[in-house]
Image 1 (spheres, helix red, strand yellow):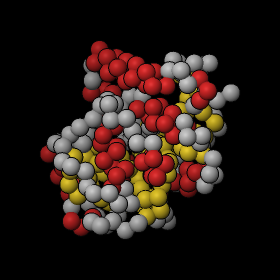
Image 2: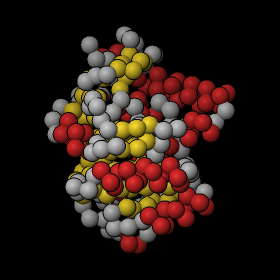
Image 3: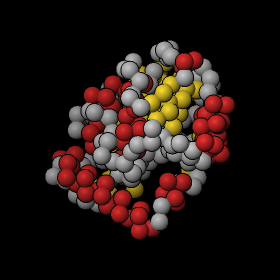
Length: 247
């Protein structure tokens, strides 16, 4: 495991972590009630898995920090960061994750059954680099995407996405220029797929989506500005890679 990222802390009880087959990771910016709902659902439905839950706290919210102190345990680790961008926060979690595989969740989701089993089964195929609940395809161009049921897609959505930790680190993780979460999942998908691996949707995963707090917290004007900024960055890197679109 790499050293703890600069400007972050892990409690002593979590160091060093035991190697695990799976790290279930989420980045928290507040809203402890949402985080509790998500955590309860993960622990309830994944008792048979060799896993850790890694909570990356990208916030100085005192209510959230107090909540993490209550839920931290041998199985639930907490990484506290000085608040930074979304991409950098995910990467901080990837560097300290103990799992061979990682499932990254949005904390506004809720598991209604075992998600890890079907996702890991899909990733057992060496040609698959990323598996998720939801995906998109381009329409002959990377300038426009639409929802697609798969099974193979051009990119996956970050509500629930699974990949090998080593694969993620090998491509540099998430783009840390993405301070806002939008499009960061697509950009990471293209990083993984540029290595020759496939992105797959696993149909029927037991996942419920609730209110997306980061989206709702911004004004419509601000959301539009941040989303466009990220999409233009995505196009700067991948705009000519039509070879990565699924036929």
